[in-house]
Length: 283
Image 1 (cartoon, rainbow, N blue to C red):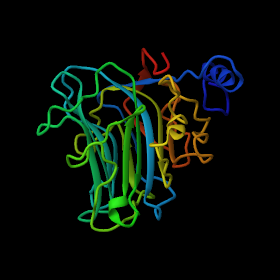
Image 2 (cartoon, rainbow, N blue to C red):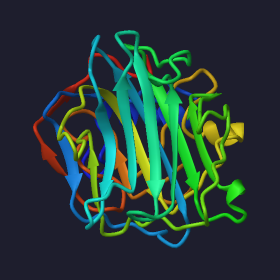
Image 3 (tube, rainbow, N blue to C red):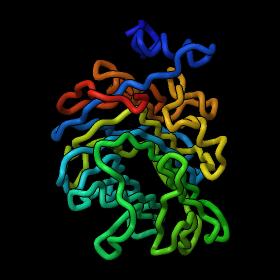
């Protein structure tokens, strides 16, 4: 680890190349075993008055039957879960579906979507196992009319969002525009608050930014995270490069430093332990 940078020497060398015509950026990745979680009981976040949320992460899931796995959960004081991202088993063929949700608060407006196959619609494409995939999600819930609200989801350059049977749709009507509250809430990664620490898989470069909206329907915006060959892009020591502003949460690097939040949202507590993944999305 290079002192003060939050990066390993291998990353620094790669990043010099990425900016100066040498070797491309090489993303380091970690393996998350069942029983491992990252939690922040009171996230420091801006943008509660915007309705914006953007997040991106690379993942690779393995195993024939992994049930439901919560990758990201937000919990409010009413024990409601206004934001989540979780995977569900696809019957051995891969990830059955990825569910995304953002809500104002309990019993109020929500915007949600399911990517991939569901029990009621098994014909949709599942995400394959043992394959590195980038998930790019961007949400704007404060638009009027409500039919113009945006919930985008891409796997790389492929738009994969399925909302209430409309495909591929990035819009879902709710009764009224609403803000998403993030500041001060409890945020967990790899730790489903209903079934704690259930995730088992590999992850790299988790970028989570309340208060920021990136329109991923624009190819140039996707290139800020995923290059034209489908590989990770260097996001900066603090994740600041895509927008010029560091996100609330940015996890990157190898197992020795991944759990250190390089964003602005405060420290996370690691439950369990991380190990280095045997592969990288840069491979």
